[in-house]
Image 1 (cartoon, rainbow, N blue to C red):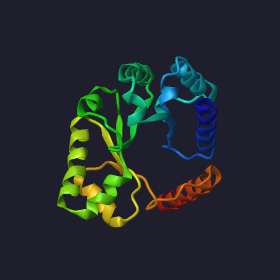
Image 2 (image 1 turned 120 degrees about the horizontal axis):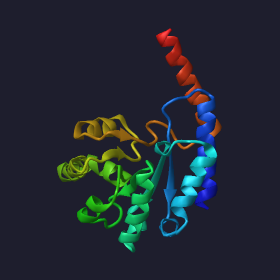
Image 3 (image 1 turned 135 degrees about the horizontal axis):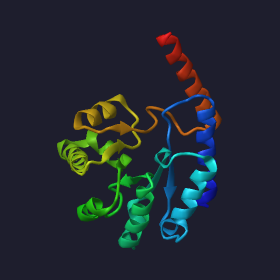
Length: 197
């Protein structure tokens, strides 16, 4: 259930705060059924209150397919979450059938471009033009753009040229448990402190 995942994610965020690791937020995915849950907004806000965390520390991710059947309903829930300061992102963009009109209407902060587009960049000029157009369109809508599934420096460099804001993928790290991430973040924090001492 989302609420158990949400509580666990926020607990991990509190642990990072306790370790003195700054500037970290957390993302939680929503399914179509969760997006239709009448208690969604109140449950998310209660979870944040229990954790004593500010709403901007949380990002809700949804897929294109989760909004297709009932876009008006989805928009209402997302607008309510966003009013409280929670950020909203569209995950796996390009794998569903989101129209440009729907993308413009949804209260989004971020678009995460699906890995399939990242891979296609190496296949030809037309494929590169498609991903460049997606990034330009998202930026024109004042959306942050994240490239998903980035595995090579070449992919990273191409996305940077096209104006992509961030990346995620194996180039940075494979998925790993919270404790392992904590150790990594502590090492990075300590190294940063040594450099600035």
